[in-house]
Image (cartoon, rainbow, N blue to C red; front, side, top):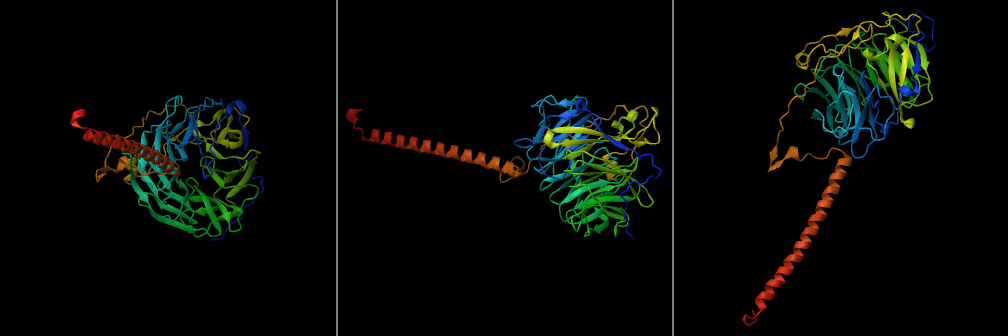
Length: 481
């Protein structure tokens, strides 16, 4: 297979997206005063849907994130309520694509948790999750919702395992155990029948998730893969990474033949870890560098040169992470085709950036808004686990999309189990899962030992006093009684 080189110069081929431009929201539509996390984990720390923006924050004594209704832009008060049930740093958050008040989080405390956010947002700190999921032996760095099933959640831990959770029963039902190092990213094809992963062991894998079998595998020695994304129904994968000379690269792959990339090219002008974002409706790819302020975008085609450079959004403020608005939350009246929510740590700011197709007409632009994946699941968790695949349920964005979802998320009622060994309930004495938790437990034990020693010393003194009193009684003569 011949590796094709790409041209980074914009050519004036016919394209409806040739003049797409990025527009930063006015200051009053930004979110200010956010204590954005300083964690260096390679994630976005931000999740967005049509109701809320969620951001991982700095906090003492455990991990937390805040959830802000999109209607409450502006400066946040200093004591804004948080979701703070985790005992270790929160490493990833993702909104359920079908239940807009349901968000999942994963943490250094080895747990995955599912939360239900009240309508209108939080009024006080939330510490109780609707589900607490334990199965990983080390911290959990990634979570992904299945794209078409309503109750399937994937989690990837630093134990090199991917667990598939059936939220209808609140239990892990499958384990993918084919990786030999930390999993860096996960991505699904359109119907969720295939999972692609990038891994620190320098391998790119295409996996059948229900069986865990590896269908295709590439050993990326020249192109060290960091992130991977499925390109819709094109049967292609796009990866970002670095070359053996440590230059930024992107590569395009045939998902059925990973022996060699179709396209491989160095990226100049973008720094940091490259995050790819793909819009299957417009076939546009956005590349953003973590720690960089710029976003470069391309149009993907099925013919050479495959990736056509369009333009670059430039900003001097580096981004900590980027959240992306689902399609049904965009402003179709403004011809908005993509929207980022940029985390600017130094300013404590969340900055919306709209990608807009310039059009003179005010009428609905059907050519840039085809039928898109909606908010109704195509199948249940049990159906998907039984082997059924279905494409997403599509919807039109004409006249905006404001139809409420009638589905209600129901967490399973889980009975408290006990595992008693030598008279000790092991589930009541769960070992510490993070260094901070271990230190807290150590200091509690030190305090308890100090208290017991003081109590023992006091009792020793009292015993001596009683012994002396007893001896005095024995030595007293009957005449003195």
